Length: 287
Ligand SMILES: [Zn+2]
Image (cartoon, rainbow, N blue to C red; front, side, top):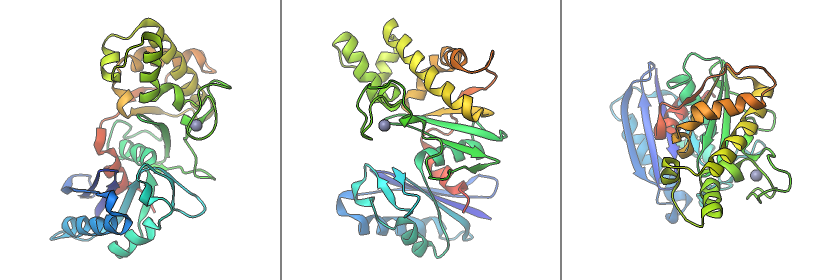
């Protein structure tokens, strides 16, 4: 029983075909070339699908990971940095290519699925997956499956309110978590404090105390709200910001301070699959 996953990114489309035990049979990348439009992207997916399935048993499951939020009413993308995908019937069109039903989910849910099925959260029952990168997102896996929620927004902690009347968010509200602890938000804050522009990677090597304290405080409050409601068995961090090592010890202490509990037994761990989470998660999505 092979599994096939496709991760549609802004610059590349990645595909993988896996054996039932998760070992890779074939893995390939192809440029998205999104400037050529939606039909071209479909032709690229079709090419990739043929390459992956050539000389192997046909996949019993096919999943796609899409950038951006999916509308629960239409199953189409609502927003995406690959603009030509918005509003298109991607799921149906990939089903036509694959000749079978296809599961589709956003990158945060695919990340959580991948880490649950094959990565750092393997063996845990209730998993909260966190993406802290350009944006802040999250996903929930329960009994090995993504929990989408009634309105398909389960796990979207990045747009919870952190500071009323705070930073303006692209979503139209003020004070969202994302506007404080995403990569760009942290770089902007560093600039405000020091008058210097530096990439996050550089800032993290020698962070100014005020910047670090604020970051840990925001991280702790935001994640403790998730823990109070969901109380997951494990939290896995992903995205560029997850490379900051102090999040795992000091960050965890900060979450504990704001939790409705005298201790925090919940492991907060780094992802294992890195950039591969999208494509592996897609392969493990359930219909
Ligand atoms: Zn927001």
